[in-house]
Image (cartoon, rainbow, N blue to C red; front, side):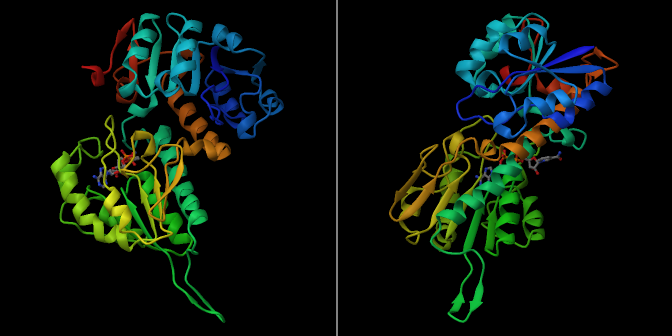
Length: 379
Ligand code: NAD
């Protein structure tokens, strides 16, 4: 029987849990038992009693989880929880497997430390965006939640309503929403804003997104800058360089000024987010307008964003939310748990662990093994 350990999340403000009770049985079927720290699911709405009922073992301390488990599943490990993630390394042993978000691009020192311990670690940020990996794609799951929540944040700060209403008191015009970056979060933001009745425009440098934006009933803003070269072979945007971003800002100025709400999600993996909204562009927006900068954790797409804060400048509210999925912990945990369970099914079968590195999903997420850093991101 393989033992799966689920410690309580320790990052400040983290409310999610890596495994929810509904997935415990799925582990049973592959010959694995879930050992969970008491209270780990509480903030997400899952009680110890529910885990017990599904056949999990509930233990009192974090130490017991680490001591007994072959595989540790977390939402935030290593670089995604730098202070406590470092302390957890002391609880780990050679050959133990660690899986979760790890922010590997920004925490090489912690990755080196866990490698020295002989831990086999998999960073879920590095999952390939292929159809086979879709059922494990935690990035898409969490981005879906962020895109949805960004619109609700915007709507609750905007001094206007989103839908057009024709009433006895006159006509209320719909809000104009502009979404920058039409990846998973951006597309969900478009869909949510449309459901609330806003008029939505969107922009992305990857030309493939035009059709996706239009299929959701939004208008794609053509800047003439989009090109195939903006997309790498993994489907992600490339870093286009400062001159490109300068041109892009110039061309975005008018549409930003006309919008009541700007939701920005533009990101380049492993890099700081590009600045696409300058202070001058904010000055040109109408008073009462709202910017929700989903790139806040990566430095922000707006020059004025303060990560984790809501500020007002030139009459514009600028929201820099961090860890947005943790504000919807029930469904964020449900999706994360299903994804990570599917990931475990790649290497646990009939009660045994077998890591086949010819599997591209395992090889591309593997960070450390046999005391070494194995991932090409460190080359
Ligand atoms: P992301 O979070 O890395 O970036 C968000 C968006 O910002 C991307 O669409 C990117 O193109 C855009 N962006 C970057 N720089 C920009 C700029 N200067 N101006 C405007 N937009 C800019 O991306 P993501 O949401 O994780 O999605 C990455 C890709 O993976 C997409 O192509 C997505 O469709 C694809 N994907 C594929 C699968 C699958 O097939 N299994 C699953 C999920 C996502």
